Length: 222
Image (cartoon, rainbow, N blue to C red; front, top):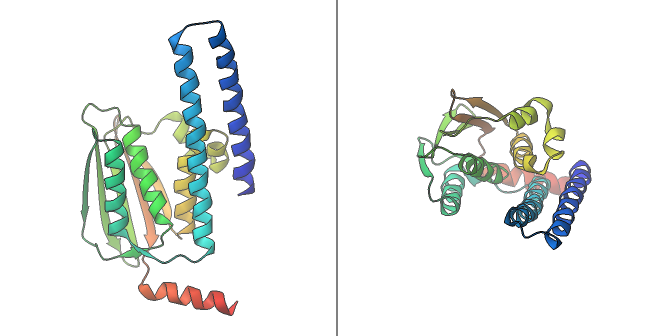
């Protein structure tokens, strides 16, 4: 969290300086594009705040031994929310394991994966497909889209680690996905499906209802 707070302050300071600079230009210019740039950076500051708050909540959930949640409910609720924000995107979901529970920290991971697949999809017919399959004591969640694939910046985040994501506010969503999956005891992989489209696979342990009680008891003993 210390690293997050440090880099977030840097990002916000950078965005604020840009806003001030363009605001000064507006005083001597009636160029509409200048106003649009100011609005864009203001929205980026708001988005950084929202992402950092989600990341903080993830750490708090893990610290408080949160109760496992049904993966099916996590996915359906997330799809419903994201589809309202991006109605042009067609979402599909199939699962053969709708009664499996996972660490609740997976919830913001799923939401951000779906949001990322929707917001960056420039295909005239944008589609996002979610599938779930049990793999022994783990469950594998796959989200595939027909968008432009993984861009150079995202590749840098995945190859160089979370510091790269934190150095740029737009990478906080990826950092949240990677960090949240790790806290859930799982792993995440990013692949491309050719010139268009990408596939993200999250594999996390399956939890039983007794897991929460066992963690609570261990916490009391400690």
